Image (cartoon, one colour):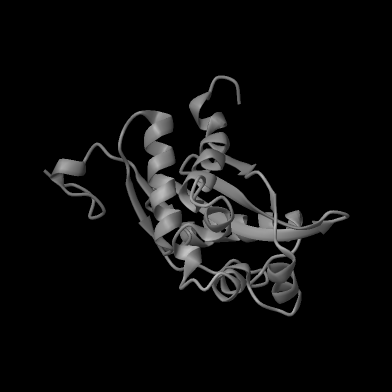
Length: 188
């Protein structure tokens, strides 16, 4: 039997998802969310892709563009997959201060796409000042909270909720919400 190079014999039934990042949290939450939503397992790999936006996106529009670019660039890098996922974290400000969030963008091999946004949470003033000085959120968290590479672990949300909600759980819910049109093909 000839199986595609991307799967081995025991995984022949599994669909392949490519995440537009090598960040282990983003890969893990994608695998978890897809498996939970579809009640089956998937092969999930990450590739380094460009977001095409600022290192620290500001505002919803730039952040969504970054997520979309990551998925599209992942598709260009590995077009044989079944799904491509882009996850991009951003910050914005309102009268209450600076808040963080992320956009999820998913595209399927059938050229169907969907997107969803995480919940938001406000950042401490000390972190906000560092971001305004040009630092990325993860770097600011590392400095303020004496962490090392927190963005590949629990992230801001994990630090600020004392681990009650970590970055994986935070992204997973939004990925599941972005999968709604794929779970309800007759409605979308």
